[in-house]
Length: 124
Image 1 (spheres, rainbow, N blue to C red):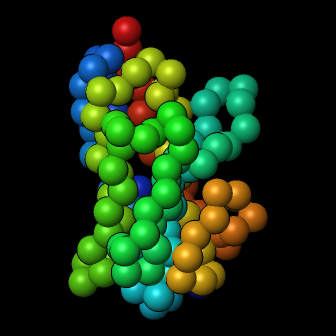
Image 2: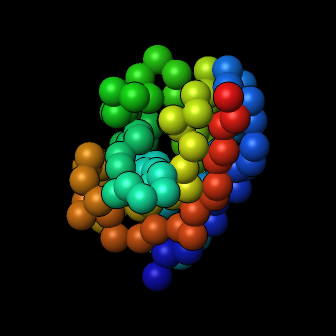
Image 3: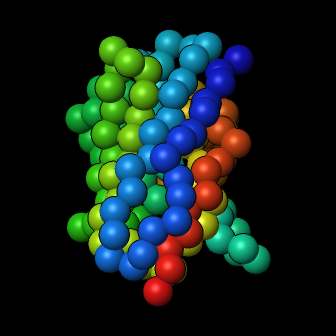
């Protein structure tokens, strides 16, 4: 079993920043790729960013490139998402996900554990 707990969501004005964090427990965190997905009301959950087991490789959705940065701290079993220059279209529930392997996927099926999500609301 893996437990993932997200934090850091909230309400921010367009152009502002937020930093999301995900605390992991229950499996060897340092051997798993991690990712962030998001789901806006009425839409499907979509990929945002992923990071490999050692942080050496990251990948981003086009919507996140240049504005979001994913990072991890294996000593603290945490993964973070720094979000800058936020836009109203970034409004969504953001989910942390853990992969069974060392490298992540752009697809939901590539992850076997999910957090409960944290709400991010960007006002215009």
